[in-house]
Length: 51
Image (tube, rainbow, N blue to C red; front, side):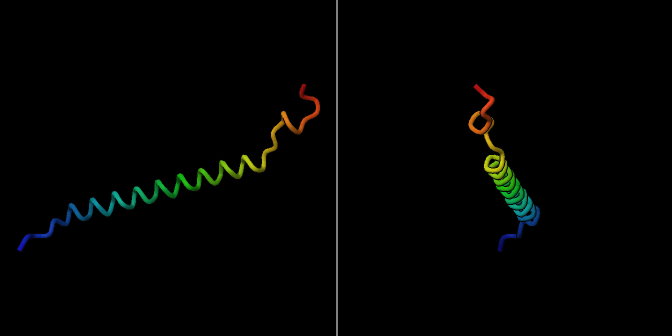
């Protein structure tokens, strides 16, 4: 029977955690960006002093 390669398994778990963390961070950044886009009015449209 083959011997289990624990270091390979550990590395795979670490890579999965890192990938999940990065995806979560990207989702948060996208949510922040969309929130800022929705809450910040465009000056060109709303400001009558802009010609």
